Length: 391
Image (cartoon, rainbow, N blue to C red):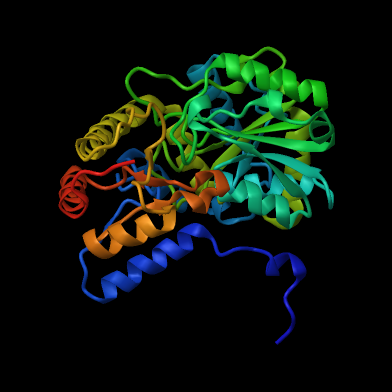
């Protein structure tokens, strides 16, 4: 067998691949498992989006190689979404690039700006790709602790100046996976000022910008004057339009950074399938009723989950963003041992917080992507298994 590259040898198993394996093993034993582990919407893709891709599948030109940067019509729809949703002007020709899902762009941007030994500022806990992709590009992650007492926001003031001066990328993600935390414009203003001071690129992952509740509306970093000088945002059709398997997203913002990523991508992929881009256009042009319907569904499930946990002894606030609940594990458990315990005893899968980095230890993440009846059943099982918990 040919020896693996050093970079591949250092890749840890992907967190959610392990969860999927546990689900398969339990199902093979005939166990009834309720999975609150993976953030994959169970709500169907809207019919009008499916109808659009059906139409586009019969168009011969869509069967050919697409533009690596994406159709101008798709990029214009992204720009229109930004104008309508955030009141932000985006140049469709120079400040937008299509992505084969935002995860792809999040990984590839590192190869555009990170040289071996360079530093990225990575909030911890984190979406694992921020950290792994930094490592694959030869960079090193400097972790920014996301602590409950800070509202799970990074504190830029505690970053050593010598670290900030060497950093290439600052990763941000609000509404935040896994904590469900949200950020306001004051925070983004601080982030932009910090990036300008140290000449680094902000990469803001906005996958959950439209998964918000109780009147909260998530902002774009580009609502801050001058943010385009130092920032790009990664967006996705996956969560707002229930299209996780379709693999269509976008990056917007700083024209130089967008062009650099597009140029890199032109050498490693052939762009997103045009029929899927047209489906994305349909969603982006009609985003409001779709996301409002999903928000109502997830809010009801959130209330069941948070209310159920609080009845057992937790004291959780109702998260304003994402479809995740981030909660401390009870006394006597680690993140991993608690996840194993509730799977074995209650048949409920949750994700150990330690899978999102060292500062995730002591927490678990539960998703809102199961229907209300199954969420209620999960709470019944956990109550029967755990009773009243202590911290």
